Image 1 (tube, helix red, strand yellow):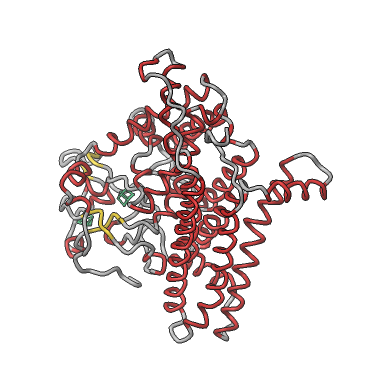
Image 2: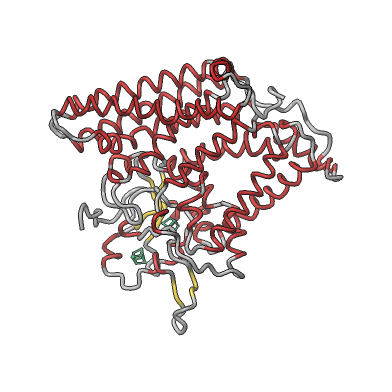
Length: 484
Ligand code: SF4
Ligand code: SF4
């Protein structure tokens, strides 16, 4: 096999060896134990979204979704790993439903890529701006219900984890960010796998007398442990850990982002360098981060007004559509295409631009992580404690005032206190992206690495500077008391 993974025992800390956390994660019901509180939380949020006050900062549906969930999500992804997919409540209801509905269909072959999911990720970003979702508890509640329904519908019809792998926009966001996570689900010793005959980690554990009866699922994301590389497509569901009869799968530490310059063939994915859809996901993850931040600073209104005047319309749909096409298609194609053209000149090869853009797109992920973390971290920290009074008020709304008078004075950090952190996060992302870009240049052009690196360094410095500019603008305090 090309570029076979290493066959040595893995080094690094293994989370499963930690005293309390490790014991908990090895527990068969660890995942449902994390999913259940989030499911209950989602039910409370939906209920409050429908019957609570329709003022976003005072409603649990909008506040927890757009301030706390997003902020904690990106923090956990960057300091640990994909624990939100692990604790995903949509998969809990889907697992319950599958006791009654056995999916019979395989996901269509022509859809076994990320194009649909990337399109849905863009659609969610578009809907967020068009419907001002952060400001509407009612629409946010419907969004949560729609998400549960979509996961149920897809996975009731299609086998394996089709929704997670091919549809879920949140999942794709998590997969992209988790390539920069410090933890990874990984075999402990590939020598053990080499002599393994059952491969339960992918096939699942069957009953010894009834082979049709699956006692423990194998990987539903089609990631075969001995050939799995990195976090892409891994939901941290723990199935492979429970299924492996040799206790040979762990959650180990690694250098964050190192998988981004690793072009080893990956189980269930193939080669990063050949996956245009994954490269598009990386690019949307980067340029979407800038677009999403741009949507909440004052200059966006001037730009939208200008487009509306040129079109002679008051309809927001075509205005937003132009903005999205400009910032998510035209801008990436021009900037990345320019860097690829420069690369081609530097190497003196007639290589087409698309493969160059595809290979270097993954380098954008660390900077994108920095921008998302700075943006969502800003909302999280400036509204950090607001969930306390809003929860108190929500229970009072439900006729259960036992949490006492809402502590409305509890808000969060000042914007001035958070700003240095934002700068730090974006700048750390820049350093990560520069490192990955250099390692990719070194890998693909060992004799001209420095010359090839320059255009990509220029590109990411431009993106970093634009992110700094965006975050230095006065921000809309979406969904927080300060903006309410
Ligand atoms: S079941 Fe365990 S030992 Fe066997 S291939 Fe999978 S991870 Fe390796
Ligand atoms: S079963 Fe697959 S998706 Fe789940 S943790 Fe293991 S590798 Fe990741």
